[in-house]
Image (tube, rainbow, N blue to C red; front, side, top):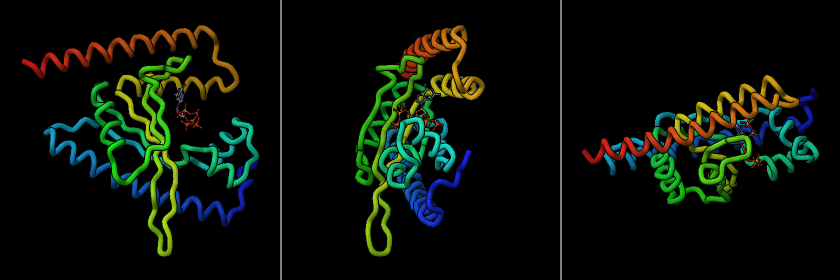
Length: 205
Ligand code: 0O2
């Protein structure tokens, strides 16, 4: 596959800007989470992962969506060049984090997808926010999109197996595997609800 479809100098400049935006996003998220922890004497985050999408994946995504491989289309249509995954213990933690991010004075929320309330047909469960991150350059302010995925450890466990399966069967996942995976997502959902209730009970004792 040809990975050098973008103008190199322009792509290098864009990647630097995405890196600036990621640094700014990381810093702000860390502050918001520490502040939440200070106010509530509780840290809802198990762990966080950060990544910039590779040029190769960006090209694949543009092609999958039917767009020409141009830098303009990348900026307009690939909303997750900057990706952050926040993994929490309980569903209530996920919603706490969503609330904290939505209240940020630094990012604007562009869109959200609640795959906890409305799981995907595959069984995928998670909460997605697309945020707009400002970067303050010498002479101007520029804005970049980032996708924040917020989910429980159990949802993350399911998604990582699903990801492996998609990689193993890039053309079509066998039906029996699909079905089993979907059934696992129902178990994950039930487990998350039970763990949430148990945690509430323990907290009230
Ligand atoms: P990768 O390799 O993880 O980055 P959009 O990004 O909004 O233009 P889409 O697909 O409508 O496109 O958005 P959506 O549904 O919010 O999905 C974006 C990302 O969520 C995906 O990015 C995955 O990371 C994750 N995701 C969505 N559906 C599934 C799923 O069924 N299983 C798993 N494991 N992850 C999922 P990418 O670029 O597709 O993949």
